[in-house]
Image 1 (tube, rainbow, N blue to C red):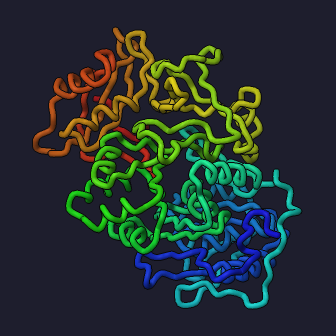
Image 2: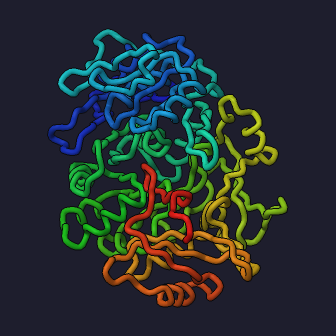
Image 3: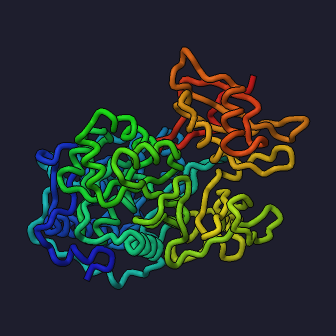
Length: 493
């Protein structure tokens, strides 16, 4: 019996993977085809210490990862757009024995010395092996690594996060309970497959349930509408995607119907601005569910579907996850007042096993058995968690107040003249730190004035949270998942 993917053992004709924007032309694998193909590949890589997967947004990536999990071989997903220096570091640090890639893929020269095994394709479709049977993976140690996912550290090279089979299974099963996720669900998404969001939640999640993955290959508003209207029940996305969907709703009846017909809309990887929540809810009647996780912890909290809309919050802890807020002096904060800011610390079966080859970094990341997330949050009276930013970049100490950048960013985005916003702190001789707003105006020719934006924030939040300086940009620097890269903002001056 496949402990990770029970549905593979049945070998049914139910769709498992469908990749491509147009449902009529997308390449599809049934559970029977996926089982045979993955089993054949698993037999060829069995015993390897680790394998690297060139993680393009294709069915080949999904097949390669499933095969490795069946074989009990840890996977190192590689971003196809990774830079030369970062790729060299990942290869030297993880030392994979093999590279799994598509026959037509052309990885960079840094991978030329690594033995390569092609995941066979024919006419864009995976070729199933007719005689292969699914190996039983129930005897594999649940504490053994399933994935080694490299994080983009704020300082130094990326660290390899060791995610055990236990952690992946526990997190996916907790989400299944919170979201009533079943084999009847068809998940639509267009997320990268080298991150936890797109690969673990977006591919392994549906396959563990016995449902269908419908990956668009690349995000487009039209692709989302077609995927959902063709039977999709769930949509996973990041705020940038939902912002574009919200922008398109007013003139696209098909998109409105598609989103309204979905059972579950989920946003993650960064906070979804309140304004986009409100626009989507007003047009479709559907509330976007936010959840909170990170590479080291997988999923920690989630808003529960069907509950009262709470834009700006990430819900309550998932089953099995303990969560607390801790002050700078290490004391545990018991306040549930929506104002007291502390660092989020979590513990539970969803946690990673450590950083590869970095015992000192692993030890520093924990307070006993509690993982220090580096995220700052407040808790509402009902226990709901509201994130306000990262400790390193988003906690601003101004005039004796601890202020989270996230709530100011949401307030700025509520102004009709603001398209994008980021907030940082800068040294100030009087306040300690002053609040600086970085704004992309909706109309570059007529940006809202700094005093106008300061008054707008003060009216929504509190006077001490108003920005003291406003700087205007054409666009904010962002990573692949749409997170703003605050350290890449221009220097003051």
